[in-house]
Image 1 (cartoon, rainbow, N blue to C red):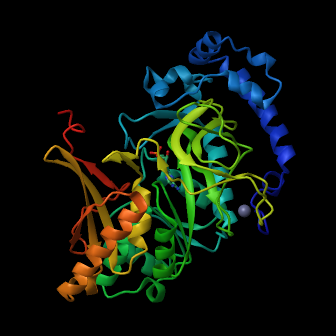
Image 2: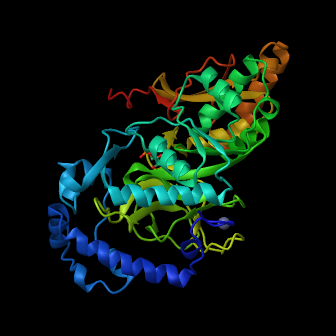
Image 3: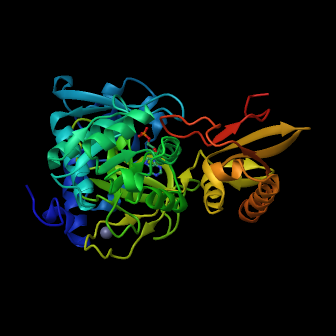
Length: 440
Ligand code: AMP
Ligand code: ZN
């Protein structure tokens, strides 16, 4: 059991140069393995790519990108570089955008993934003495089992609560003195209403000190709200099932971007239009190559997630490069009245305004053949039962601040706390009911 600040100091404290030489070594081994897969043999042949001749990380750029479409285009077993008997588990994406994709894991893959997530949790201060309540969905979704195995490896007491059943979640926290939770941020916000309903204050009535929040885009304002209301530190956790799940990038105690574990992934940031690398530090689409996976490696996988790299070294001493908060997916962006909008721009404005409650939704409609954007906003309990004048002031303020941010004036509809649908999974922030979105 490691002592001190680092779960795996040898790897976490590699210098940038050491990381790059480790990456090249591992990449060559991965490419060699890929020769066992019918898909990759064909992929290399079509690209005129000879894996044996790779002598620098840049040589990888001779390969085309993969994405969800590549994975969906046939039997997922064709990506395997081991016999099927060696596969011990499969997971799939949550399928928020179309058909789910499948990833196979060998026992060593599960072990390597567990190590990565344990490294993340340990980095933020989780120890054997902690009680970890995992409020993520178990099953095909990777958020449940990924953290579960890692917390057990650290030696914490794990409560595999799964998602939903809010009152029982709160009961478990109180009965067993939960100190650490893993939760979808929109759900954590919603859960505050349930605490209030029960007459409880999480700061006073629980022992929580850390939350891991991830699986969906969220803003710094949302994080701050959670930190204040729960009296905790909330760390951003990024991953995707195609890269095994959580454990791809994670915040350290300084909370200034998420470290991408570059011993296990090669990160590229590209312009989604030209597919060329963006200048360092500029926003682009994240592309990953797996270096730690033996069963089903993926090469140059396009995530459609937008972020930028912070090139400066981190104060924590880790040289693994950091990425910013995810702004959204390239396919989250919607165009209304000709203007490009990301749901996170709306969230940032809303959560900065006093009186805004814990849920919101953007509805796009066609009215008289024109786009209309309606923003439904739950207001806080006090305000809802207060004066009408205050509500209309709030409505005007929201419309004005949104206009300043996104250059479109939306119709703002204030609704009762708890009245918008709050799922247990990833929040659906945008409902597009426009004629063209429905294929009319
Ligand atoms: P899945 O493969 O179903 O686990 O979904 C992965 C996707 O969830 C990613 O590609 C992101 O779009 C999103 N996601 C996961 N973690 C985060 C995070 N911390 N911030 C923003 N988006 C996230
Ligand atoms: Zn750091």
